[in-house]
Image 1 (spheres, rainbow, N blue to C red):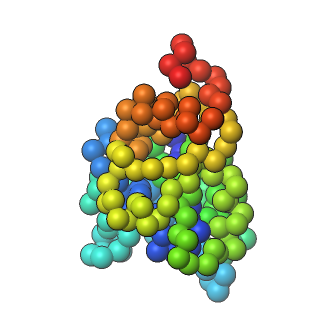
Image 2: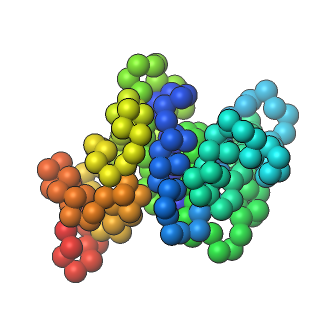
Image 3: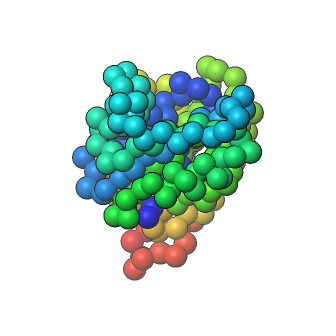
Length: 201
């Protein structure tokens, strides 16, 4: 199962928008786990009730509308996130091919195949964002994403100095770009491709 992490510098930075756009027209069977840290809770909650998930106007309903096959909402104190996440994973069908994880703190316990970071320069950076920012493979400007409202030509920055060929192909698929288009960005940003498949980059 491929794991895609989507984190952000602040709330309302476009995490759900990015996931929704990546879900659109996807051929993969997908799941989304939306995480929320609430240290006032005594016990974590993993919600999969369709009446809550599909409630009009919610982020979870948006990703369902864009094609997610399974959506879970995870609310937990930070200390219990790993346990709550494992329970959520156990609720996923065996044939899920791609899992999107939305959140910041949860990423500290995971190792996604690709990690996106949305940077909203109009708001102060959250403490939880500082921990994942440097781990992200790809950074996208929030205002650019929200104004474009689509992928394909969306500008992005590859933060790491290395990227595997597999990650590059996955990035192209998720951002609805051709492999040569991603290859051009890789070259322009002087990113080294490792574990290359037959010299495609």
